[in-house]
Length: 435
Image (cartoon, rainbow, N blue to C red):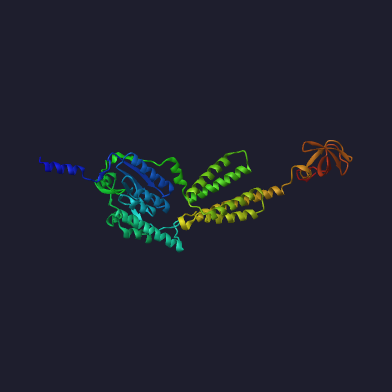
């Protein structure tokens, strides 16, 4: 071998080459549901796990109708700056990458879809699927469109379609997405996915990395931690609202019937969870203040009945606060109107029943004190002419009769003067009226 050949081999050996990813395993996470802060934290933790294990890639199996734009932005930011290659796979068949899922899919180093899946409809909408009107709606649309275009341009995907997905809410199938360069390819299963992705070069933090993927048997699932699973459930405006209402009424029942404990414990847990969900969601402080005022008025009505005045005011404040609880123009979040009015009707019914019970108590004859003794019947233990003694409510009282009465006569208290009662004769009733 000549010296020139040896030198050429040496130069080839030290020349800069694209780094190859360790093919030992692939870390997989499954996102099946809405995109929220818990999902974003889950992706971050999975990326850390994949980096620590020196995995060949992080596989994100995605099936989502969409979610919070802020959370989608956080996930996209994490994926674009990921320390390992990220493969986003819309699967299984029948799954979709809607709204926020469009951005996450296009952000992956490798984007793939299973047959029978769809992607698109990324137009920003409100928390219940309604359009955001006015100038704020236009601003949200422009921002989201530029956000989608930026992701597509960064990954070399169809920028024009990304804009249409936002402005025109277009949605396409898996095969159409591959033809339109929205995703890289269509794969029926993990084996086909790895075969099609293996050997491709991707940009990982400015460095070209050649994917050396193992067999599907080397896929390691990374589950969501329990706290994040709980957060994933409660990070929903409707769930947060129900938790707040359940917590409030649980504490009310405990305060009205102290000692039982279960309503109070249940209410405290629900209230803490509700406040936790409000902490991670964007709350309108004006709406929250109205909600608190409404709950305070309803609480006052349950303890100091105003025959509906405080209750009606509390219901009005409750409904308004519930409708304005989240800054819908900024986040697209809102409590479902059906849920708000359902809770208001249920609360109104409870207050109405409470008022009826209070009225019954007010109309009921007193059982204690002077008022409670008047009208009570008893038996004369001695003759009364006019003074003697009677047995009333198991107690012996000095009594004065309107007319002479013999011992054993039935009497009724008509007045109380200190420790002396005034009584009158009560005629015994036969089976058909007075005897």
